[in-house]
Image (spheres, rainbow, N blue to C red):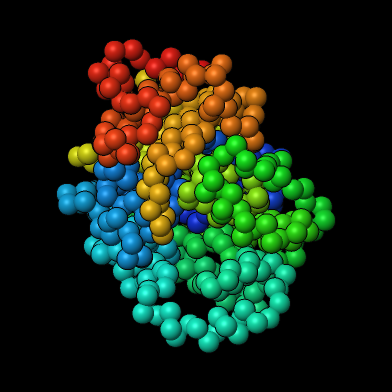
Length: 503
């Protein structure tokens, strides 16, 4: 039995997971104007991790990594599984999830909300009792070839009118309303119905003697940012500052970024401020739902022996670099996520913040160790429990590695970052290198700067070391695809270790 607390031994904890969708870490930082009283209360009573990243900033691969403790190259989910273009729609054979281990150890498992881990399995196939499932195997996201003729009349009518405020016009594709006000009430939203099922389950679990794990997954604050009142008008757009990197020209960055931005350049600055106001409102609405869950937990007398985990699957640009959503770029806003843990019976010195590099793949081994359950037979992540005990595991990672093999279209890139530098390898475009100490908003790409060539070479080496460690698949040396300035040989044979890991 794990005993991370100075308070002594704890019984097997209940586990409550509240996972939002597409929530950037920036909104939970101290001093941020987005109102998140319940997340901040959790942080005051628990432990916040300030540098948490998914192995890929896209729903399915991120969620699969959370469930399995593995990287996409290991678990087999690289893209949106609800899409026929996905490289893989199923977890690789033999891949375990933490839920199966908990069930085998006697835990009751309950799932409500967004799944999106596999296109061929639902939560029940991995040990969960399904209360309400969104983005399961019955969902297809996108438009198939044979559907386009039926869309033509609607799209032509749409193309014949003017652009609405907050709308992205896309000739031949159909328009997208980025933000707006929903006619629904708070209680009528799909997310509230999901959360309500979780609350009802908590009430049913009151007084039981079997440990349980409850997963509540919202689809907010994922785009589009269309929210009911009072959240739609909670923040005054005129009082919202544009992101510090909003006016980034992107001229020194991969052309794909500029191509993505063209759609969003239709929005004037007042619309960008309005979009951010709606995004913050969406985040506050999710926080209010979290608050109802926490209140129920306390009212039912289960707070003291419940490990609460609040996190998101990936970030959201929300106007940073003039972009929205996530996936193909590697900027901090689109990747870094909030992560807060509270465990009254198993935590030393609550109210702390930890800035070690943490991967979503670390959560599965953390939950299993907290429950006193045998570990996954194969796992890339490491348990965070030593941090809860106010310590730091020996040999903890000093860099973060991420893998991108596309979203709903194919695209290959890899990112590695240390405390100081971030490097992104693009096989089909220019690389990126940022000095995050001097340039935290990633405005100036230093990849072609001759004076930093030694740094770039070391970052390449560090990238290859991570790629080898996580069984990546980018080692093909065919002459048209081996475009990296420095190949993997030195890193793999360990002739000279990277010099930038602890910078």
